[in-house]
Length: 73
Image 1 (cartoon, rainbow, N blue to C red):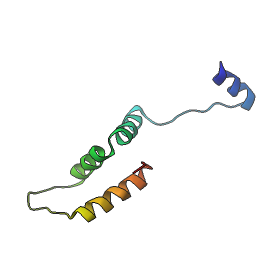
Image 2: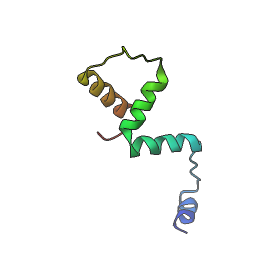
Image 3: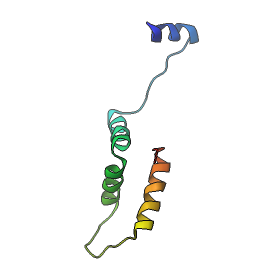
Image 4: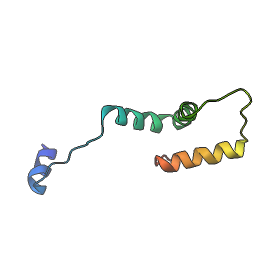
């Protein structure tokens, strides 16, 4: 009833236009951001056993990922 009162009071409807998949991805990022970050890295390109990254570069990339998706670090 509260939502219905707001509709009448504001004289407008609010629709969430995101798809279910977008909402699911957002939930996964918020629940386990490290896992989502690693999965995003793995799907972005080809990796080999010879690929290396320093902890500092990895952490900086993770911070940028968190900022992009507005995830608390």
